[in-house]
Length: 511
Image (tube, rainbow, N blue to C red):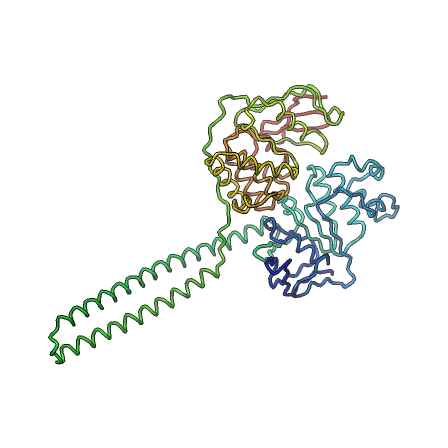
């Protein structure tokens, strides 16, 4: 069976930037999920397997030696030759993958107009049809609607080699994978089970380490106090002894003075031994505490000093819905009320992003009271976020940066950057809404470009957010935890359900 082996691998881009240190890990057949914070080294891990970079120390080997390794990147813009070859192939193996991923070869004629989700399915089909021994996937469910995610998940479950997938999609990982690699602090931890099982394991382990860490800190405080008391007592005894000696008769050489000096010397020696013992205990406790490696991670709960909107109806869009000259729906009439938590669903291209943008354009609210987060932020938009942050009052800037920290970004690093990364930009955009008492959020795939830990922090933020929001998301866990109502595009109609957990839908408007 094929396998990937890392033996004592260290890798650094420069002497100042070490990514991995003495890494030893084995990945066998079946699907393995890879998770970790943005910048932790997940993509470098893939590059080492694919051979596009070499270890600084150690070795990466793949069994068998002639194994076929294919890596699918996140980007899906380019129409590659392996995709065109697949479309014209009549081999049964190739046609099976086309069928499993619901692909029509004629669609390649309009590649520039295909959605990112459709292109991703073509990319995956070409990779699977090549029958690789090792398949590396980077965020394969980005831009896929629920139906496409199910198709992709089912197709990938039929792959029989070594499958390794980087993903922030927790439901997808739970369905597909059977083991989890967690990239953290220059190492790759191996956990049995899919993401939810693995996360429960490392959370429990970190909880025990945190308890030991706090206990070690408490014992350190006790010993430091004991040492301080010992030193203070020793100073007091020495001062008393010196005073007594000054008062003594200079001609007194009898046994009384000698005995006093002996007692004092004995007491000093005993005190020194106690202090030495305590110092040794303190050093051992300090070493133990530092070895527990409890990370003081940025993040935590988000608390809102929130002022509710003075009006009950916040947003409304009424009229036809069109994009690129194509009518998506007519006679649409939707309202967002104060405090509503709405999920907007439907196939790719149905009009979800268009409706969010239309709600934003027609908003009667002050500009700073509604946040529209598009599916992708341009580089200029990311830079503009930093400019807008700089224009806030000190109080508001502090609140925004506290939310940024709660989402796992170091505020100092963010302020020092001239251009935030895609993940940092999305977190900053969310923080700009959450940190300045925004009344309504319009969120289009808010977890794009975020690692799993950041996704969970965004989920926690939305669970606690007291305003209204409409969200387009393919993250089923986030949707179930944060929304209570659904607007659904189905077969040219927009339908509404009062509770998205029931799955029911009532006719709302139609084309």
